[in-house]
Image 1: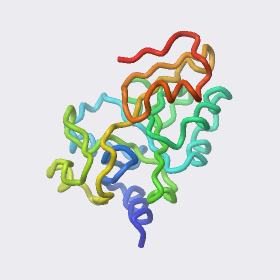
Image 2: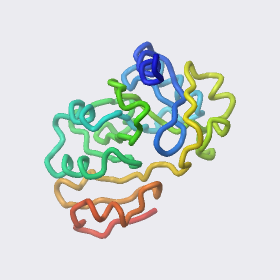
Image 3: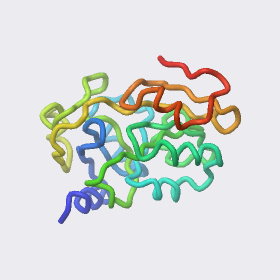
Length: 206
């Protein structure tokens, strides 16, 4: 049985997994399972009102799950994904509410460039495999022992790049072409600017 098959079965059954993403080690669970989401947040020590990202393991599956994506944002997804970015999108249908925290009108999504799990057919609610506010995990040994012990599945992907995803706000992109980098990360702003439409306002970094 492959890691991808084991991972998908575990997520579908309501488990919580530690897994290697294309950036840092992450925690994952089913995005529509309140008990699993509560466990994931408890393992991290993360406040329950903090949003998380929904990760899809192929761009096709993201398209299927987000059928009301508007044309300009759809083009942005095609240009940036898969890749080491988290995209904040408008969420008028309030999809994946457990991931959105107090703002159901916004959804964060990830599609990693991750060959080992590319056949996984279900989305996951995903967050980094560290204690809230702690250092990101480049190796499995960097994941706190409490998190590894509390997870139902731990996948070792060796040493990862170690820089988290770049967070890009696209919530105004359809109307104004405005985009902003909310967290610097693995994809630099100049690389983003080469594939997105020129912003109506200069992108801002934190």
